[in-house]
Image 1 (cartoon, rainbow, N blue to C red):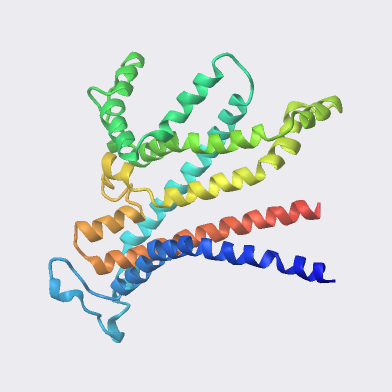
Image 2 (tube, rainbow, N blue to C red; image 1 turned 180 degrees about the vertical axis):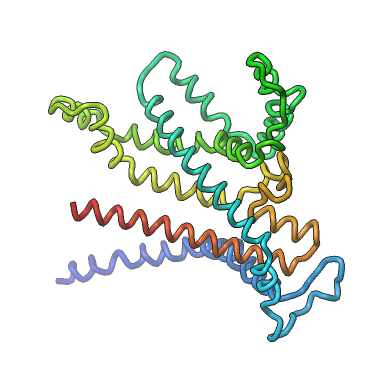
Length: 306
């Protein structure tokens, strides 16, 4: 009886130790994420402009939502939201399709597979600003760019893609950089699939498309969820490539929420309105993530019921 009581009490010190060990990490996350968010909420209720240092104070209860009202009545805000959604959805869809295709290809043995993996991973290892400079000056330049050089062989006149097709250009560059990210996660999922499962399905008469649909895709579901969720979060906060290649233009055709926040804060020096835009960016990201998770939960419920 005493030994039973002793054994029931032994896990408690371990739980206490885990709680104490996790406290510094939680404190760090609160300081890095929640404190700046609270400060941004406060600044969104001010009329602070860096060109007018005396305007830093609170606007008062009657005018505390003036920044939000001005943003919601500005047509630019809705264009920026549309650009953000188009950019995020397009990049996520393209990277998923191509990343899955490349993962399936690299999962098969062939000569030079290690070299192919290294070359395909390299775009993700580049800094976003360095990748943007490379594409803008080496690939897309209308006079000295490689793309214009090869287009001459097909009789196509040279053009500057960021000006002629601004949004497709940003989508292409971002997709080029994020395809390896999706490919690596899905490749890890494919390599965790036992060969015996595929061999058993093949013996039972399953063909390639049926094995992919009923065995490979269900096995990759969790890996797909992780890849798409993380990529969505990162693409929603994309700034560097847009800043270098198009600077949000022509006009506001490639201006997303992070770049609009930059314009308000460091071009118009309006910290109050930039903070309000930041709150809208956080709300939009949470809405997209919640919808994404609900879709995933519904798919899990359907599979469980089946």
